[in-house]
Length: 298
Image (cartoon, rainbow, N blue to C red):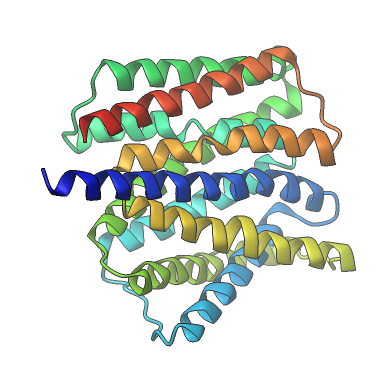
C-alpha cells in the first residue's frame, strides 16, 4: 500500500504532461495548413523534422548528455517507419482538407491502438474501453460527415488523414513501450532525436521533387512548427508515456482536438458546425472515460 501514493502521483503527473503536449499538438494542423499555401506538404514535413532534431540536440548538449541513436532497437525502427508514413499522409492530406478535420481524423489512432493491443499484445479490453472506442468513432463520423456527403477533394484528404491515424497508432504503441522501458530523460531525448533525424533523412528524397522557396513568414512558422508542436510536444508526451499505460498515453493525444478547433476558428477563419462540436466533445469524453478507468484500476 505504500507504493499507492507514488503510483497515483506518477499517473497524475503523466496526465498533466500529456495534456500539455495535447495543447501544443493542437496548433500543428493550423500551422501546417497555413504553410501549405506556399510550400509542399513533404517539404514542410522534412523541415519540421530537421528543426525538431536540432532543438532536441541542443537540449541534450545543454544537459551534458551524449547523443546516440539505437538503430538496433526494434521499437525505434518501428517508430521511425511509422513516423515517415504518418508525415507523408498527414502533410499531403492537409493540402486537401481542413486543419480541424485532419486533426480529428488522425485521432482515430486510439481506435487502432485498442485493436492492436487486443489482438496482438494480449491486453485486456473491457466494456469501458469498448464504450470509449465507440464514442470516439461516432465523434469522428460527426466531425467529417459534411465532407463525406460532398465527396471530392475534402474526402480524398480525409481518407489520407485516416491512414495517418493508422500509422500514428503504430508510432504511439512502439514509442510508449520504449518509454516504459526507459529510465532517464536522456534516454527519452535520444530516442526522440533519433526518430526526428532518421525520419527527416528518409523523407529528403521525396521532398526534393517539390522544393519551393519559403518566404520570411514561412521560415518563422516553420521554426515555430519544429520547436513547439514537434520537439517540445513530443518530448512532453514521451515523459507522460513513461509514467502511464500505452492506452492512457494514446488517448491523451486526442485531447488536442479541442485546441485544434479553437485555433482553426481563430487563425484560419474555419467554420465549426454543431455536428463537429458534438463530435469533438464525444472524442474528449472517450478520453476522460478511459483515463478515469485507469486511475480507478491503479
